[in-house]
Amino acid sequence: MGSWLARSRRSSPVAALSALLVLALLTGCTGGSPQPPSSGAASGAPSSGTSPGTKAPRSTQAQAPVVFTAQGDIGVGSNARKVLGAVAKIKPALNLALGDFSYQAGIEQQFCDMVTGVLGPGFPYALVTGNHESDGHDGDIATFAQCLPNRLPGLVGDYGTQWYVDVPEKNPLVRIVMVSPGIKFKDGKTLDYGRGSERWTWTADALDGAKERNIPWTVVGMHTPCFNLGAYSCQPGADFTNLLIEKKVDLVLTGHQHLYQRTHQLGHSPDCPALVPDEFSKQCLGGTGGSLTQGRGTVFAGVGIGGVGLHDVREDDPEAGYFAEWSGKNVKPTYGTLKVSVGEDALAAALVPAEGSFTDTFTITR
Image (cartoon, rainbow, N blue to C red; front, side, top):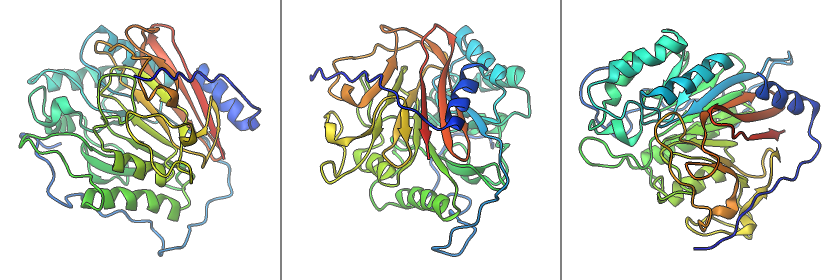
């Protein structure tokens, strides 16, 4: 394996708003067995709300940033409760649960009770399935979606599997798109997110629709990562991952690998027409470090540190050059949540530890 390690610590002046956002970050279902939705099963096609090619006007009134949290791979142990406690202290508008919840079949209600006991029964704890509950062997995504139902107004799609929502609903600052590539369901089939498939097209249309609505930011959440410093391969597929980069998604959030692992901005260029898994190309680095500019690439943040046992970081991984920061069982072990604050002019994120002391911050400015 290659040994290229990128630990960029460069910083540059950013807008006053982004600095304030970073400072604030640091302080502060239906029952039944889970089945893959049928082809085109989303409960609504992506809609921009405007005529094609027309951008909706945005309000000139200043908006408060939207704050949300995200983490995956949770369980029902003491560290999971500590992470939920950290989320409660942040008081976000919503939480993105990135899959792998109870790790045991038959205790779905116990998991839901743990979540609502800390965050409240009406809190938007928004789900996308992981591999442990998609096929029912360690839980049932349909049951989780019943006891932790959607509480986000305007959600489009199949909650728990493939959906998007604009936040806030009026004059939104961010479109959040949650998808399930690389996940097998009870019939043993993996949902098709291959090039040109209906789910590929649905995702592309959802991202294009955000631009048509003139929404400043796009965030994608899914369970499996492509680039990572652990043992897993690119389960979402290289084509689908490159689609997200091509569509200039600002931030992609994943779990599955029980690490914290955050890349630099990864982008396409004449010298990098596509990123190739298990390889590193310096030409695919758009922006490096923690002070980034929108449009130069996509940040991939793995936040599989929601409570279950951590994995080892492989610092000699051939993809290591793509990563800015990381933490795992053998490197600064930490459980916690990513806190993201999205405003008109900046997206600022910080890893908030619940057990351990490692943290990370990055800001993308427009």
